[in-house]
Amino acid sequence: MRVIIRDSARDCSSWVAGYVAYRIKKAAPTAKKPFVLGLPTGSTSLGIYKELIKLYQQKRVSFEHIVTFNMDEYVGLSPEDKNSYHYFMSENFFSYINIHPKNIHILNGMTKDYAAECENYEKTIKAYGGIDLMLGGVGSDGHIAFNEPFSSLNSRTRIKTLAPSTIKDNSRFFDNDIRKVPTQALTIGVGTIMDADEVIITATGSGKAEAIRQGIEGCVNHIWTITALQQHPHGIIVCDREAAAKLSPATVEYFQGIENRLS
Ligand code: GLP
Image (cartoon, rainbow, N blue to C red):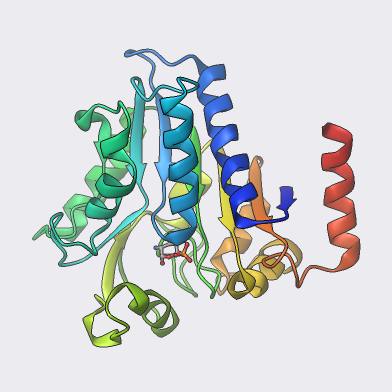
């Protein structure tokens, strides 16, 4: 695992966006061999999308041959609903870049057949040869995508009931009213995330400090699903000082020492 610690949330966003642009450039994608990106939603991702839009406007990255798969979507919210992840992605990222709409994939939370929708999502990812680079955030309870505590670390795309902690955290987008937050979501599994060639999880703010401590220093377990990243051959955690606050000084020194030698 690689751990990047930056002073601020903004620094984390520009590191991740720069890395995405570098990866895309290195892959030199074409229509026949596109670069496949896994994408998150949530406030942490907002800064990353802003930086990526900037890089696109500066012509330092193109999304012409990029295929995307979003991690999750609430059950029962239509793409027009302001709280749906379809809406979030269009408003905050897709409408500003040169991505082809046919290359965008987001789970349909309005489907009548959840099992078929999820199975088809997995099949489509496979048909593209898998995800090259998966970006993600983490919940305060350590969840990645909507893989809530006690999710199987081998889980695939499926319908999931949201944990009370997630409903509480996400109620800030729903007028702070937990009754308005959907109770279920469609989400890619921990196993789906682990299949990606490379995974970057970004965490900022003190609310994520325990999740980051568990993810880096804890044992692999299904309560803090972020810990699955320890088993990934190319996992990267990017966090700011606040999110890194619960790491032991020795851990911070170790990872910073490596990064200093790399730069
Ligand atoms: C939601 C999403 C996750 C995201 C998490 C943290 O629950 N399903 O993918 O990582 O929120 O979001 P934020 O960045 O807003 O803290």
